[in-house]
Structures are given as C-alpha cells and as structure tokens.
Image 1 (cartoon, rainbow, N blue to C red):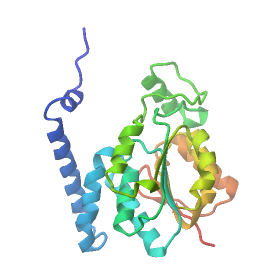
Image 2: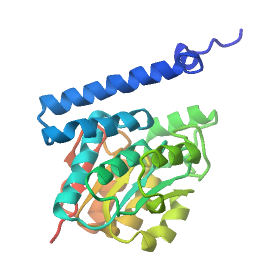
Image 3: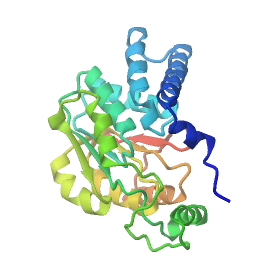
Length: 274
C-alpha cells in the first residue's frame, strides 16, 4: 500500500502554502512582541524594529524566542562596549540566526563588521561514540543505514540545507555584501584556513550539534574570541557530544568562567577581559 504523505508535507506543497507561511510568520512575530512588551525588554522605541527583524528570519531558524533574544543582547552588548571583531556562526543551516545577527548589527550601527557562516550544506556528519546512543541511533535512522560511530565526514538528511537558501536569506538583510562570507565544507577543512582571515571575533555561535564538530570549532576559533566577546553554544543542553566536547575543552584550558543558561539547549559565556 503506498504511503500517504503527511498533512504537513501536503500543505507545504499546496497553493495555500504562502498564506500559511505568512500566518506562521505573523503569529511568531506577535509572540515575540508580547514577550518584549511584557518583559519590558529593550528600549520601547526599538521594539518594533526588533520584531521586524525577527519576523524576517523566524521561518529560517530553529531558534526559539529566548535564543533570538540572546542574539539581540549579544549584539547590543558588543555595540555598547565596543567589543572588536567579526560575527561568526558554525552551522548556519538556512541562515536565519546569522541573518538576525546581521540585521541587528546593521540596526545598531555595526555594519562594518565581517560576517562568516560555515556549514557543510550536506547535513550532519556521522557521529562518534561520545555523541551517545540516542544520537547514534537517530543518525542511523535518518540515513537508513546501520548505526555507525566512525565519524565519517559524509552528509545525510539531518539538519541539511542548501548553500543557495542560506545565501538568499542573508542577501535579504541588505548587509554590505562584501562583508558576507559563507563557506561551504566540513569544519575540519574550512575553519583552519579561515582562522587568520577572520581575526578577532565579537560573537562566535556554535551550532554543530555533534562532538567532533563542536571540538574542532572550539579548538580552532576560541582563541579568536575577543575579551568581552560572546561564545554561544546552541546544543549544550540537548546533544551529549556537544556538552562533552565543551566540558573537555573547558577542563583542558582550565577555564573557570561558568556557562550561562539561555534555555534548555543554549548556553553562552562572555570571554573574560582579564
């Protein structure tokens, strides 16, 4: 018996799909506005611009509202404290989070900063043992293959997006195009060669999910983060491999600075200035 497509998948392909996307976008924007108002977050005269930036990107990021607020606070802090450096995201997916950073930076007068986005655009690679049984099992299910912990740099359907979709979302920000850099490839191949080019980093957002991905991002780019700059770890609370890679790096470097809680998944730290 042929499979019946899910209602969600059928609706996405239907003529009313654009209307549904618009409804979803406006619903999320209202929720964000309500949270800003009820929480008395950010200056009153800035809230509509903040909501507009969220509305523009909300369907192209997996971030919840708390995660987007974290980005807004980070960019505002960088502006207020004149923290030098680029804005970097490792694991861009469709580009929504990085596009929000670009929009916030432009709104706050930081449109002279380079922006870098790194992604394989092939989906997550294979996990390793330190990613944990649940992740190993899920990766195998999505790949339709036996469980593997080889850590092979081979793509799959998990968190896969296209370079073109990411580039389009970033282009819509009207950020200076000469400062937008999207690098396609595995972190192990792209980050070492970009480290010197990037230079100081004001905000480093890691969204690689897995142990090896997080580890290579930490070991390659942490030293680039400027004192007072932000390191945001998207998957610390839900992906065991990400947490292990972070904790191991903290221990190896004897970093005493605690991670701050944003929500179940996300943690961040401001790099000490001393």
